[in-house]
Length: 344
Image (cartoon, rainbow, N blue to C red; front, side):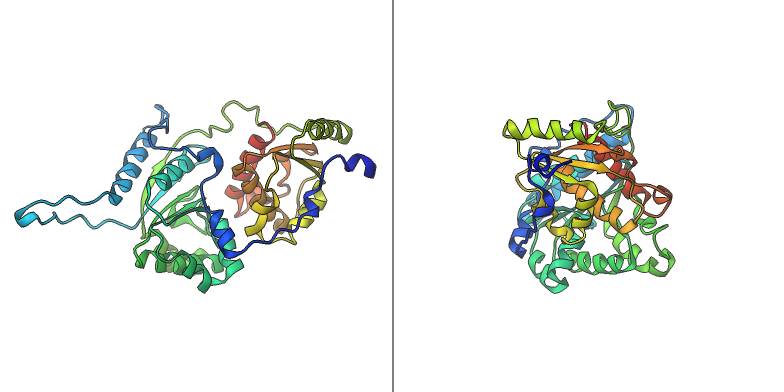
């Protein structure tokens, strides 16, 4: 590849985004494909009754924001049942959890926020704990997509964070691929942090959702890959000439560049882009690089950005024993999203 061919599109590696606390908070809204998500637009799979049950329970949770009608003698309202401040949707990939979470966010009063677990922990890391609590204090609702605990630090951090917010009246909702009492298993000595894990779990009403991953129902199971770098370059060149905002990077260079940017700013890294070209994809053997790619893929998928890539198919990028380790579900989710992004 010559520099002239590379110059047909800008590089993500040339971007070094920065964001203020206000700008970071402003990004905490549902992904754009869920801009109009509602309870009415959720389509439960009739083969999995738990999806209809989950819809009913999360709709009932949303009713908690409705004004309480007076009743009884002298107009006194009836005593309401003691309810937990959060609801927790547990299920596999692509069963509509995020749709329901976004619908709940749209139904909630403000101030309200919507983000992934990784986004919240990254934001806390970027701002500092005290500043993050100050930023979110007074929120009516916080939605946490893909709730997960990857290490002891995150366990204790999120326990404190959610505890302070819930104590102040903030209602919570989360989705996850892991039941609350199993969070952290396979990643660290969960028994040493059982109290913290249980403290988080106790804040949520747990709702199980079964079903098939809708992202893979009509797919062959592999991400589309160009047969050569030249074929990829020609495709990028055509799109760039047509005015499509597209970038082109070496896969290894981009992975290295991600290490120089705080994950909370990945969303700014891809701002204004409709497609990403990745040249020479290779399997990742370094876990730190792989986890950074997972966080990046989440942002790309949420923004509905198409990925054009050459080399190893993107669904094979997590190599070695990664899929057998403690981050298995995280990598499988990212793989599902890579397949979808490479076939948009």
